[in-house]
Length: 443
Image (cartoon, rainbow, N blue to C red; front, side, top):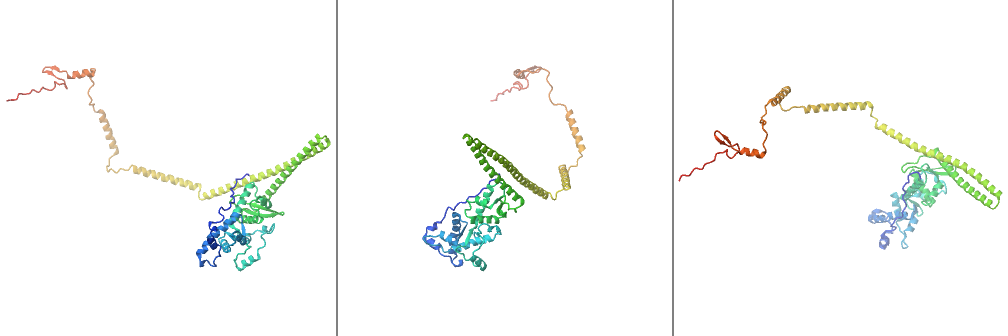
């Protein structure tokens, strides 16, 4: 298939058919008893029975794959040790009130579909008793009145819709009702159920059904969320082309088989020495080959037209998307113009300049309280620089003689010098300080 495969849910029977209470005789005797005429008499007993029977009825239908049943069939399916539940009619009324069940006749009548009269006329005649009960307001459940399980019917409709989407190319939206019924034979073995599912799909606006030249056609909506559009000339033209393609393919296959048979007959006759018969068979094969070539040309032409239609549908989708995008962009820029944008940019620049001026003003503010001339401060600073440049250096002069090694310099530093006054020690020597003479102590 050339379209994305949709995920179809499979119908699975309920795992638990009967609850554990089914083995309790005392409990089941209570549940098999009839309901009181009024819930107010004993609401706890009433609710206890409803809690047991409501899910059981739906699960039983799901397990058996039954979309529809009658009260009589339901009573027979729940027989236990020769006993039949007496309150199932009340249970059905409650399910109808909760919209989990619907009378089949009401469901069919709620959908305006004249096509349902086709085939066997399964839903045309309503039971006379139901008509009288509807007019008189009598809600008693009849034994043979048919009810439809709403939840299961919707699930079946989803499965059939999904099956069609995955079985046909995206360019094909129409199919004959007979072909569709054959395709859905595994899902809808009963013709009545098949028609109910079609009604549900029509109610959900996912199919449209019409009759053309005595043939019933079903058009499906393409896309999981799209509603089906009315049948138009394009749909009918595509359907005719698809039918022509199938017809041509069938003829080509048939003629190809005949051509192979003629070829085999010619070979067999030639081996048997029947030359004339072999020539006739070979001539017949040539005619068939020519016919097959003509059919191939027609088939190729039909397929090219279908390809162009499919391409045009894709182009239309792209154009629609562009148009929607332009509309959205136009709506988004409804109040935006070039003059408005220029004016906005000028305002932004103006406010930026004002902000810069404010920042500079705040940065240059002086809160020291001194009113000093800036030129005077600069002159004073230049004067200080000149004074520091002319000031003599306080460093000692550079010696004229070479420097002594550290060891010799140390000794020379400690050697005394002879002067007129006598020996004088160099600064730092041990002779630089006078020797202390200890005076005698008088006794």
